[in-house]
Amino acid sequence: MAFPDSPLLTFLSGYFVSTSCTHESGFKTMVFPAGPNARKVKSGFTDQVEGVDFKHPLEEYTRRYKTVDEAKTGHKETIKLVKELIKKH
Image (cartoon, rainbow, N blue to C red; front, side, top):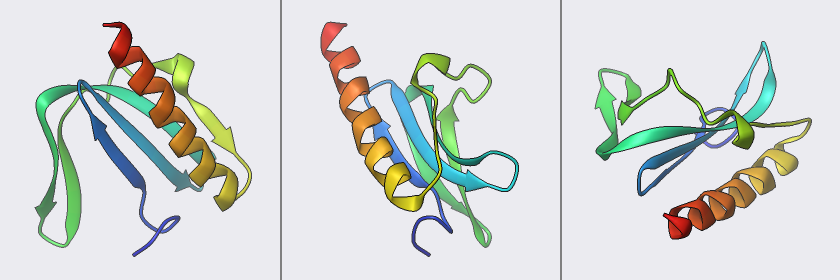
């Protein structure tokens, strides 16, 4: 399945960027802290993510969108921002 039916997921050093579409909040990108072994795994018929701290999103990187194209562009822009954050540390 392609976006928007399945989320856009990007693992970066220490962070996880996720853009998805939900019925409650529409298109949204969020960034979460992630451990060094964070990864996507198959679990039965669904995909799961391990090693990510979903309880502590980095709220300053949360973005909402109205269209699929905005969400795709926003995901890429958020990845750039997080890469800059990584460089600073």
